Image (cartoon, rainbow, N blue to C red; front, side, top):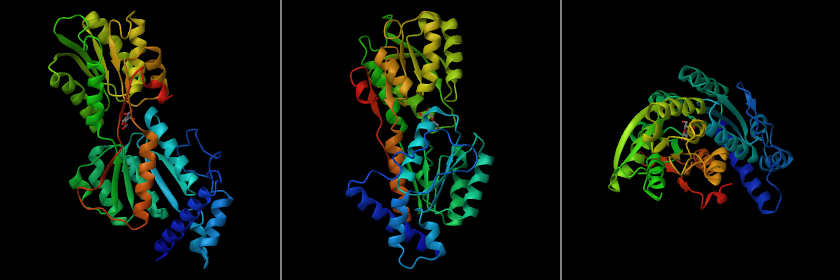
Length: 370
Ligand code: GAL
């Protein structure tokens, strides 16, 4: 009963805000956006500004205590697998900005790469009576447990960034996954190499010799990017040789170390450095430059995410290319899905994954992303 009222008021508030936006009023939280890393514990967003409060007050004709609570647009709990991740930092800032802009009260938690810690955070959010959850699981393998927990509590939930299987999600109809299909990004990385003058075979020996710097191998993004980047080459008829595959856990320093060791070990044999993400590619670039190698002349380097630093390096010719992992689009998609759930929409098994496209970034189009 209370929850229903909360949702009704939140929706009325959203509608009023939408109408306000049509009237050319700037978005409520436009200059109120928290772009800094929120503190690990309970970073509550500032309440929506007066526009939101007025809208809600108008909507809640029979305002009572419950309605007053929701006057801020509802309480949303966001769990991020760890704050210390370059791409997820961009993503969570986008998420927070959109939610706050819509007048929600947002609390973002740092899972610190510890599933047990994140489980506690989810339980705490549920105990606090949040209206919806947005969760970036620490471990893909924890999906069953997370889904059982939110289902038990009846909390509408959007999972992001780590996709469970359709079967796992199918047990709860107020659950949606919003993310990208990592096979697409892997394929695009391969295409970036195929688009070079020699299709990655710099020394002309008939095969593309590469090293693969992988993200967290438990993560489906890491698995698919690793597989599909190489598959794009073999599908195009190229022979390939894997000189090394190492886990770099999405981390810049690890990317640098792995590339440094491999460059010392394999030297000029390395023609392509595949990195499952940009942060590791930036690390690898440091090692490549320190070894006196020149990207796009005697070695190729590709990443995924389109972090600002990587876009600069693509523009400067120090990275062969990257793939946009659309944080803004995914954050918007997650909020849209959350609002659909709050509005009462339910999802059948097999229809619970909402995908946002990746985009190839090359020197030719990089300026569109900067
Ligand atoms: C990937 C992204 C990586 C890392 C990872 C975390 O989609 O490309 O940089 O953020 O998610 O799960």
